Image 1: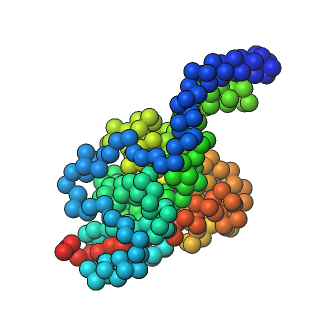
Image 2: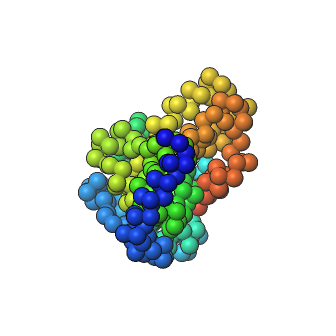
Image 3: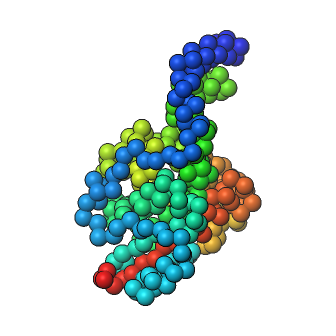
Length: 285
């Protein structure tokens, strides 16, 4: 079928879809605060001793309080002492912390730590490094659930599929959810029963994003061993996972990956400092 015929077919179908769903799209565009449609907190982790951290806006005061309770901050690229008993995740950016999507997303990172570590055999240090990446992914992909483009894609998936067909002559799986995942990680689907339509929930999106990064980690290590890119070093090793996440692996293979210079990736990396992670190796008081 010629491109002109595909475009005509696309125009007819999109018009009919928009006429029937304009109000739904408008509602998504105009809404300023998007909240979770389903909370998985206690369904997934009913016996967790770690409760969602309630952000007060006084970061330094809270840090002092946590340190008095025996918590240490896990800084980037630090080797975290083994035997972590508990970990608390704090959003340092006040505006981000006020966003209910971001708050529930980070809550999942905290409450699902033990389960996800077990599923993927992750060390605490690796888990913390992957967690830092996810908040940036959430921001860049859908602006913490506020992006009009994201809501258009979620509300009109048929339009997205047709547009891909018109422009590329073929259809590929649509990215779904708050972190725009194409395929739910196999272990997450099996262990949690997560489906693509569940990825609009911030708690579920956090779990799936961590699973995606954890499953990409062995691939990245293999690429490092095989190609040894000049730009990859201990400081930015985990940042290179974004190249796999976003389908830019070719830049690693061609030795052109520079996370700090790539606008898309550097935005995600900068957001890592907004997530404060505090842990203790002592019994929780």
